[in-house]
Length: 334
Picture 1 (cartoon, one colour):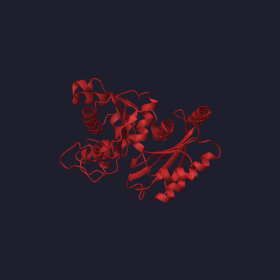
Picture 2 (picture 1 turned 30 degrees about the horizontal axis):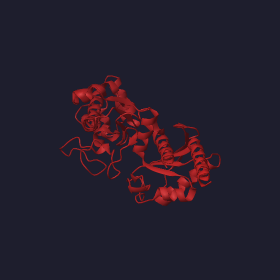
Picture 3 (picture 1 turned 90 degrees about the vertical axis):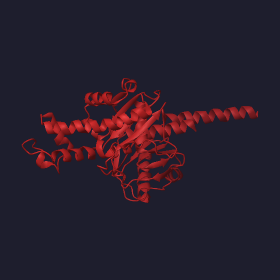
Picture 4 (picture 1 turned 45 degrees about the horizontal axis):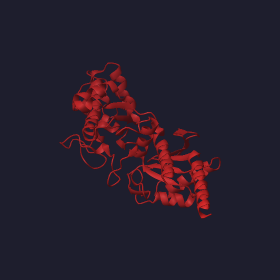
């Protein structure tokens, strides 16, 4: 009798778990300027994407997240909540171990505990670059690859490392901070992290503009019409002029690609990945043929001939989808 009851209870629990797996979950991407969220089912967005400005202070951020969850619950059954956030995260406890200047007071916040207690929903909290890497890897059906490295080229440079479908987070939850690989030795550029000559200081959007300023300050307006705009030039304007035949603009673009490749080469020699997926706002300016040519020229042949460099697929939705996928996987694992 006891065995029968146990089997029945086990079957009921399994049925409940199966139902939970088929329910959509809420993915939330917390950045320094905005909170974005949407309902996700089977790695696809199945609702509108709602965005609100990120408030200042941990308490107000928590309140904003709780309000978004409550708003979605009015019209949806939610199986769980996945949160992608800037900063270093202990994913076992859901606590923010280290934050960024864009989220003052966020460090030390036990976000998982607070949200679960307030909503009674399972919650998974992940670093935003890791979440984006996880989403990109699984949507691209690369989860069986030995190593996928996702590099986000934006205002800065972020990254995530996925090994046989699992995020590699490191001994101190800080793996994937690829933007802080050192790519020069002469203290040329100060990075936002406080160190000199990080990859981010050269290969990011800010790095592109720093390179443009350096090169344009050495030429005359007769050589390039951009010379008189050295302090106010934009990435878009440099790209446009390069495509129109401006050789100085072309030199800037070429140099930026060399800077991007310098970090990829270091990662390739360290990780020997199957592929790189390149995402972020600056990825739209990447010439992949040029990038691969430079990469092959600077990488050990055995690695260079195997590694693929591909554009990522999910754009600004990667963090939302990745965070949602992570909470579903956590529900299944538990």
